[in-house]
Length: 93
Image (cartoon, rainbow, N blue to C red; front, side, top):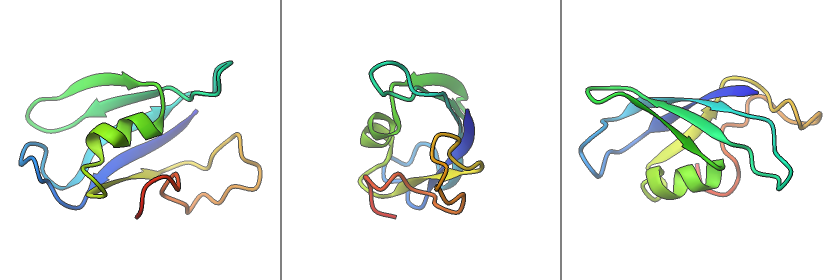
């Protein structure tokens, strides 16, 4: 597993604000390759949600590039991975 945070640069919805708005835990991939994500939302209305992958999470909560994932741990399933990489590559930084 690895930890991360959802960092928002702009808040077009004016709901969650900017900065770190959620904490993440990415679980190991299952048989179909999905890496389930547990998301703990911060702020005035905290809650926990589960997503079947980073792409699905960012499709809904990325706000078209206004947010990114900042990983706090290196990817344990990528031996050549760089722990400084903060984006999945699917969405622009």
